[in-house]
Image (cartoon, rainbow, N blue to C red):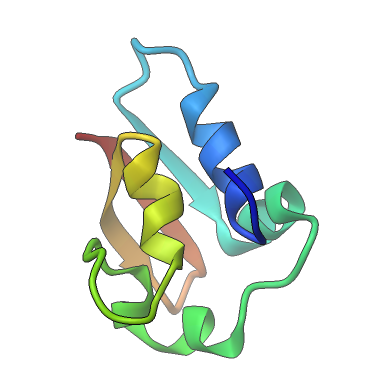
Length: 84
């Protein structure tokens, strides 16, 4: 586990197994990453997709940790992850 999104993967892996969903503001995600999200995360719903194909590496962080994005709200700037 390495790279910019590794802290998010670690955070999600560290949540109690009884926790089946977690909602994080984009600001909280950035705190976890200790870095900013790219503009596309704020503007493009596909950035938060659950596919591990193509050139995007972000989904690997949450999917490798056993989570999927259920809902992303680009207006209110939050994302809800659910356990796979």
